[in-house]
Length: 290
Ligand code: UTP
Image (cartoon, rainbow, N blue to C red; front, top):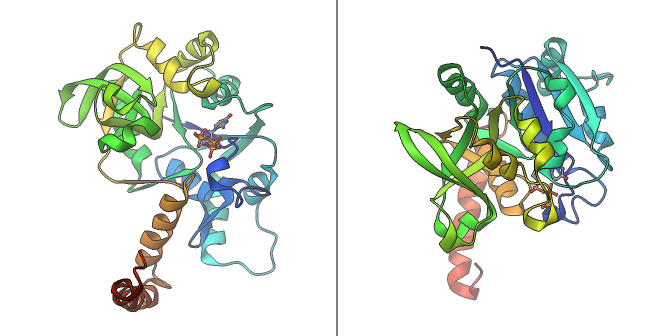
């Protein structure tokens, strides 16, 4: 069974990135040459997906403009690449009326998804290498919903959804439970969901049945938890890098990693960074700079 459709929620406030996100969506923050959301759309495209629904909301108009065909007199290779992708992909938009949580945002995708399994990619996360491609390959074999998970240290577990899983085969777990942002001591494992999922349309029944959960918001995690009693749900261990551009440190790290790998500026950036870190390390001894 092919995955043809993807849903990208991008309606969240982005308060952790203030004041950067006061007048612009966090999904439009630059990571080297492109805004974050362009990486996410490209991740879906290179996973074979050809129909994408982006869930936007108040103050998110720039996202829609970004996916228009460029009318600039001059284009660079990144704009050309995007135009080429846009020739093959249909992108649709729907507005979440109120920011009531990820679980509420995903509900807006029901008509678009119709009766097909679909990929769900958070619009503020970048994965290197392509996590959705791995998930799609997993789904084709397992034919049940699959979540991507990563191993995180104890102190980070309370920031994420955490699963309890039984090893199914190497790198794949059968999910037995899932909890949103548990207290570190109550986390059922160190396996955290990372914003990439393959779901089936059954999720919408569960999304309709849940009450507001953690933080007073509708949580996708709670709908997945509800689904566990009637469907098998698997977790795929992702061992690549995931950057959450909704937090400032990850945003900076993503810029550094991708700038170092960049054909155009990578070498110059590396030399500058080497010199900079040597100087800074020397400084640290002098005046205690961290
Ligand atoms: P976050 O947990 O990052 O929340 O959302 P947020 O509101 O965007 O950011 P902060 O916490 O205020 O800094 C995870 C994903 O869910 C989407 C976000 O756009 C992001 O992709 N989301 C969240 C929605 O689409 N709608 C919502 O109501 C909440």
